[in-house]
Image (cartoon, rainbow, N blue to C red):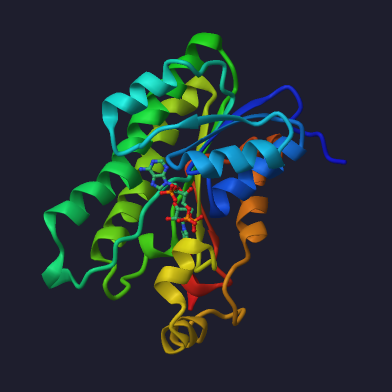
Length: 244
Ligand code: NDP
């Protein structure tokens, strides 16, 4: 078995379900000590039962102070996956303050906050860290009813670049993966309607949505030394959607 992450400690946010959960299990399987952060305790308990030795942290990343308190108990992280996000779909003319604030707080503000805390620790320890932000094809294309979500992910792509610029001299790499639709719980809520799904698939050159493992493989690549000279990029996992 691949043990290429042996001796490394990884923090994965939004690890209760979907892509984050699969990334946490894959990293653990490849030898990393994983700290899985999410906000539903039952998901974390089932993850503890499933993955050998995964540690868990239950916190709502929308809550700045609670996040800071929870992360004060975490140290010596080498690898960070900023995966937690919400997708609240509303037509532009009906976007509410609540949807705007809650989305930006989780999808963008928490990435700033968690990354600041973890990067400061990496710099203090002098380790070569790697950070992967989970963005989306929606960062670079306008999608109906996605004004808030697209805006959070577009900002996340730019944050990835500025973090790469400022953290590079500290030997910390920062990249994003930008998937097309994946049929996780989030994907199912937003893309189960057959006509909507078919319209999206028709715009994807490879003619299908992404699998969770497609995204996880790219996350692991960008966390690993195989991408040692790559920082500040947005890696599409989109079957070619962004070139179509
Ligand atoms: P899911 O909704 O299936 O899982 C998201 C996870 O993040 C859940 O465990 C959720 O916990 C957690 N989470 C959400 N908000 C918070 C919060 N405030 N604090 C702590 N944890 C939180 O989503 P996916 O796995 O599909 O998405 C993962 C990432 O991939 C996201 O960044 C998403 O934007 C991105 N992405 C997804 C695509 C898709 O089609 N699925 C396409 C492109 C990008 P809980 O359920 O308890 O709220």
